[in-house]
Length: 94
Image 1: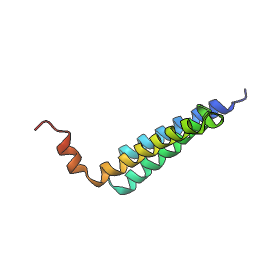
Image 2: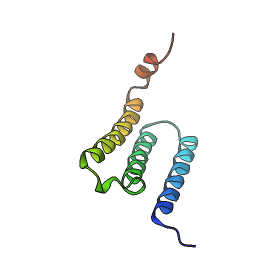
Image 3: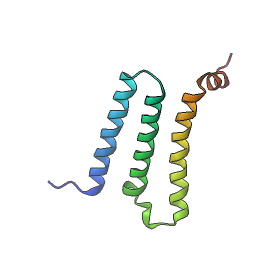
Image 4: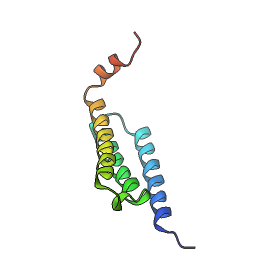
């Protein structure tokens, strides 16, 4: 049985998701973990955009919007590490 490109990409995404979950459970919160998670978000997002969704041949604007969203999510992870107390106060009901 031969694994095609989409199945291989899916398996890589599953493996990276399991890796990220394992890191999140085993490592204390801090900058190394936040940077690792942000990097995994960027890598997985690019895999989905380029290989799974196959957007490389479409309008570059669509691809750039999607890649910008991936970058934004990774930046939000780093911001949440930088100012956790401020975000906590904004998101609590007290």
